[in-house]
Image 1 (cartoon, rainbow, N blue to C red):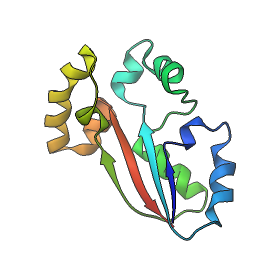
Image 2: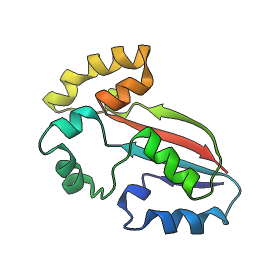
Image 3: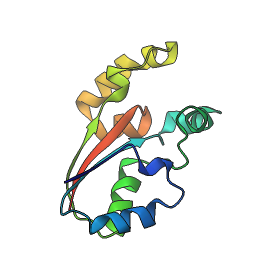
Length: 126
């Protein structure tokens, strides 16, 4: 099994990386930050801040992350959200969003990730 944790958002050509990686092991686990959300698009510098702080050069939603893996020939066996924003985050904005994120996530995980952001995706693929 190969673990690819918080990697592809940093690579200029993640498609080639994923295609080359496929033959290396039958199973892979990917962890992909989901930086694209309504609130990050709405806030003027949210994505630029992520680029500066974390050096992310690609931004994903659940759907674009899963599609990228499938486009590279992976079978997505299972996935789930990891709620990094509920476990971490010490800025005022992150603290203020914890409760709305937690409440919406309890009712509709996809909507919480798409609207409020602050989640990553853990994907099991072969």
